[in-house]
Structures are given as structure tokens and as C-alpha cells.
Image 1 (cartoon, rainbow, N blue to C red):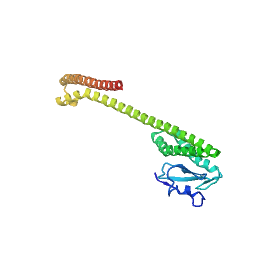
Image 2: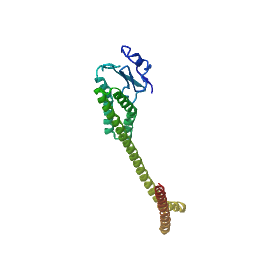
Image 3: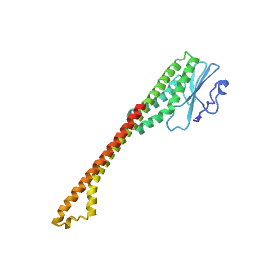
Image 4: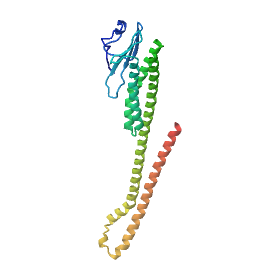
Length: 260
């Protein structure tokens, strides 16, 4: 991802440092020359950012701090780390309020650029701490950066687990709905199988209920009885076929589980 940001021309920074910085900020890193410390950071990344915005923090040989986007004194360190803390707190609240796979996905999407940024920020501050071991501002910023890196990792894991749970729950709901529809279709097939022979025989025999003579009622009774018997046999066959399919599926799942 492209980065932007250059060193302020008004800074009277050693030339040995300035020549090591190009037209863009590049990766987060430490530059230490002639007792001057330059920290190359990236501003806290938002989800829809298409490039990283660089921020330079300069510590002079006498311990004075300056920021490339304005500000002086040791507070510029905590201001930079504080921007990350505010963004992470916002995502933490979103994760806590998430109730759907879409909402968990948005949290994860926001965390992805922070995972690397916070890790690199912590590495930069740790290296700077080794170069200037007696700067309390660096120590405090380093410790907070470590906490932010850990928080981002834990928050990502929590959001990923929430997303997986929502996906599994939705899949289970769809499976339950599919089973309900299958049972309804099976019952409909049983009913159709039970009455289909009766309807077929009546149609073939040309039964007309409105014009039956008394002598034909006995023949109608035989037709109804025969149709219901054939329908019962067909319904039993359909039910047995359904049970055999369920049994085969269950055996297949058991065999698959056993292989695992």
C-alpha cells in the first residue's frame, strides 16, 4: 500500500538523516544519526484508506520532540499512540454490539490494517527505547503500544470467533428449514400416494357420483376399497423408502466420523 508524507523543510535536522528519507514515508522505522532520533510512523489507518499517511517524530540531541504534522514536546508521542487507542476502542465497541455476520465482518475489516500497523509501531518504539534508554516518554509510549498490539490481536480473535459462530448458526437454521420442508414434502407424497390409486381407478371406471343408480353403489364401494388398499400399499412403500434413505445418510456420517 502506498504511503505519503515527507519531512518538513523547516526542520534543521542533520543531513545524514534527511538523505535517508525519500519522497514518501515508506515503512515504519527508526533512524538514528548524530544523537538525533527520527521515528517514521503511519497515522492510524481507517478501513477505507487507500494509502498510508506518514508521520515523523523527531527528537533532537538535547531531548526536544517535534511532530511533522504539528506539535512539540514529549506529548507528541502519546498523541500518536492515542489515535490508535481511540480507533481500537471504537472497533472494540462495534465488536461488542455486533449481532450478525455482516457486523462482525466489518469489525474484522477494520482490524486488518491495524494488526500490522500496531505491531510495527511497537517494534519502532522498542528499538528507539534501546537507542535512548533514559527517555521516559519513549518507555511509556512503548508500553502502551505493546498493550494496543495485544488488544488488536485479542479483538481480532474474538471477532473471528463471533463471525464463525454466526455463520454456523445460519447454516444450522437453513438445515432445520430444509429438514422441515423435506418432512412436509414427504407427508404430501404419502397423502398423494394414498389417494392417487383411488382417483385413478375412479377416473378409469368413469365413476359419476351424481348419476349412480342404487345397483352401482355396491360397485362403487368395491372400487373405493380397492383404491384405498392399493394406496395404503403405495404409502407404506414411500415411507419405507424415506426411512432407508435416512438410514443410509446416517451410516455415511458415522463412517466419515470414524475415519476422522
